[in-house]
Length: 183
Image 1: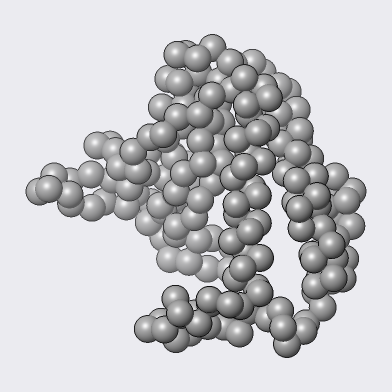
Image 2: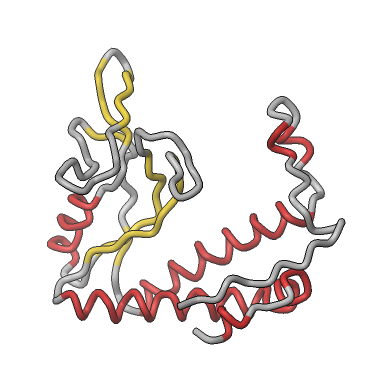
């Protein structure tokens, strides 16, 4: 289990809660170290993800963010609702997941398929859930144990790339990055 990092507050590295000023937020984030680091981390995660799957000969697919049918799990235990929109006078849904297309891609490629895509969920944001976010998703042939090994290897790969490119800064600002090092 990952330890929560000890966050060292510094006037130079706080978020400043610029999002509260919705009219000027996009300007206020420019030059703020917090947002610059978030953008750098996103870039690192994207390149590390491409690298990870490329090394395993698992190919990516660029898929649409809309679908003509509901893509979110609607069965028992699901907490996700579909997001319906109208585009060019046609009702469509914003994708929660394009898992079905990844399964199709796995059949096309043989070794599996993956993507980084936005996910849209028809629910209000709360402390545990976002209604919009990016996620990395993959489908591979094999057993659940194969998936577990892939996910564990992926986490280690991402942690190593983050530490290599941003470890010193994260350690300076957070005060404790042992949760990344332990991976």
